[in-house]
Length: 128
Ligand code: ZN
Image (cartoon, rainbow, N blue to C red; front, side):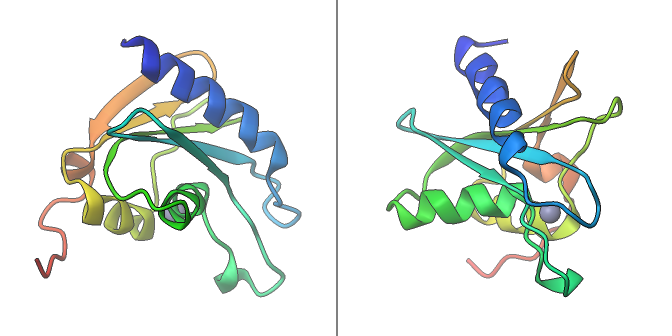
């Protein structure tokens, strides 16, 4: 695995400690890599009105977009689970908007797997 992806997993693992997840108790962290090599992190933010919760992946995308970035190469996702956590359907659609070939790296703390965004969401919705 390339060195930048190792750093990405570490950043995702570190930021999950900031998770606001009093309802699910599930801490998720993500780290998004831009084509220029910048990294933006995000974590899940839950709410008593569950539908208002935001996932770590969309949190990272929001951080990057807010900073003026729009070209993404990869995202790493880390959790405390032994099994691999892949993005939910909403996050897959949001990620694929920016790069259908984006690498999605999932880590369980011991190992990782890499998927392409369009591998996880086939026949996705697109307007452009
Ligand atoms: Zn999600």
